[in-house]
Length: 166
Image 1 (spheres, rainbow, N blue to C red):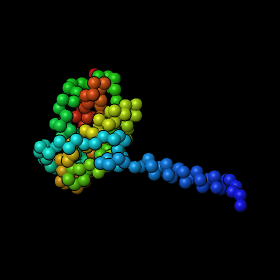
Image 2: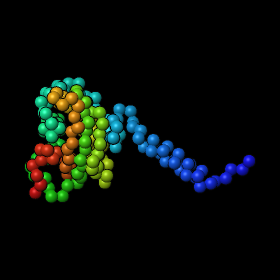
Image 3: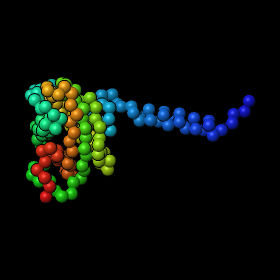
Image 4: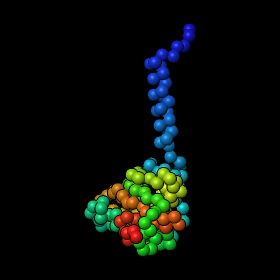
C-alpha cells in the first residue's frame, strides 16, 4: 500500500498542525493567569500588607479610580511626578478581570508595547503583586481597564490619574 499526498490530506495535516500550534500558544506557566504575555509572577511578600478598603464604585469606570489609586499607593517610588515628557518609551492598555474579592482572574492586552517586552513583564508583575485589589462590593467582579504610560527610566503613570504630558 502506498501513501499518496492528496490536496485533501495536505489540508487535513495543515489544519491539525495549526490547531496543535495554537493549543501550545494558549498554555500558561504555573501561577500565570490567562492572557498574560510574560512569565511575571507575584512576589509573595505581601503577607504584611493590609487588605485594601473595599470599593463602593457602581460602574467599571468609577472602579478605575480606586484601582489606579491602589496601584499608585503600592508603587510610590515608580510613579512619574508631574507632566510626562512628550515622547514616552512605552504605552500599553491592559484589561484586568477581577473577581468579587479583587483577585486577578484574567488579563487582556488591548495595546501591548511589543517593542518593550520588559515593560509588559513589569506591568503584569505590578498587577499580580497588587492583588487583592479593592473588592468591587457593588459590582461583584469587574473589568479594570487602564493605559500605562511608561518613561525610559521605568517610571509610569496610569491614564486615569495622569498629570498629562508636556
